[in-house]
Length: 171
Picture 1 (cartoon, helix red, strand yellow):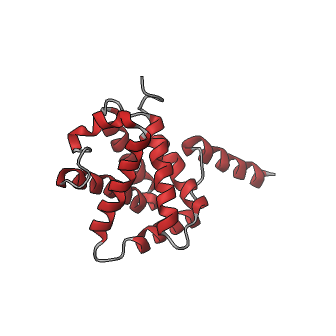
Picture 2 (cartoon, one colour):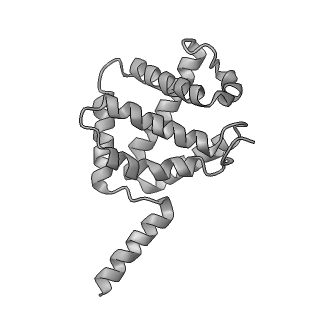
Picture 3 (cartoon, rainbow, N blue to C red):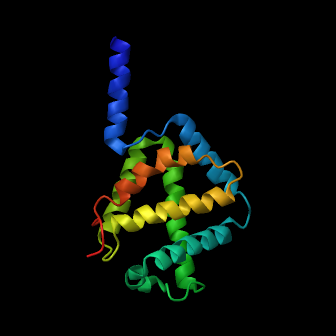
């Protein structure tokens, strides 16, 4: 009986903290798939291209994002400024994946990202949700043995945490 109560307590704690449970197996799968995807020597170029595509698709779905993203030259997706921004977005994602095994560092990184994004006028929780869906769709096409359940387990709570200080919808 004590074992069952302990197990239920752990499940409740996990659910309360991130609304999901990213197990050790999930973390390993995500980290390995991510590593395998970018092991090519041209990984920076690939990350820029992937980030550019995800961000431009997000703006296609949410044209209101053109205004907050004009500072990074969203109107010229092939520009150096937008390329650097796309890479920064993917490197933040890369950092989070690297930190999956270090809960304390991960929490600090997510707090920093949440704080940074909380000052972005015009960006909403809904935009983060849709960006996560676009990443999921893109990764499912790029990764041979993509494990959607592991990615969902590890990133549903992460996206919620980063977007936690944003309004739900555009006003």
